[in-house]
Image 1 (cartoon, one colour):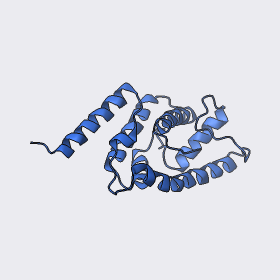
Image 2 (image 1 turned 90 degrees about the vertical axis):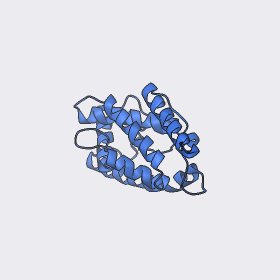
Image 3 (image 1 turned 120 degrees about the horizontal axis):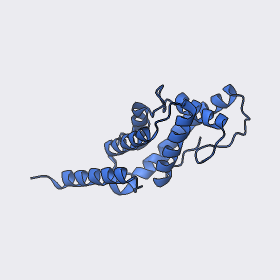
Image 4 (image 1 turned 90 degrees about the horizontal axis):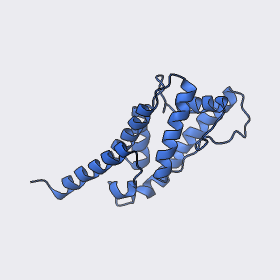
Length: 168
């Protein structure tokens, strides 16, 4: 006989799988249990600045490298960026090691960053990797800049659905 916690975990995984297949958003707070007594969002809010700092550093380096204006607009939610902005997205994703040399999301880095912001929450890690795989499957272009733009759009939708505030 299965224990109730095992049934709950299987049920949560089935919901995640269904929502991933249907392309629907879902509320992470309903399915993520934290190892500590702190709510998962409290942990994430405390840890996200580290990730944002890494993104900001990469972005600043890319802006300098590409000779773009220092006041370059954030591109997280821009649906029609210029070609140069798409290449900036590529540069930032590659500097942060979120995008690999095959123009796909680096699942190892997704796992590492999710582990950091959720204090190694296994369900959050599995969910993030699943969402990253969904984004990877959706991007078929060979153009690195275009792939980065499409990955950025996919990441942006997932972060927005789950109220995660990151900017690049």
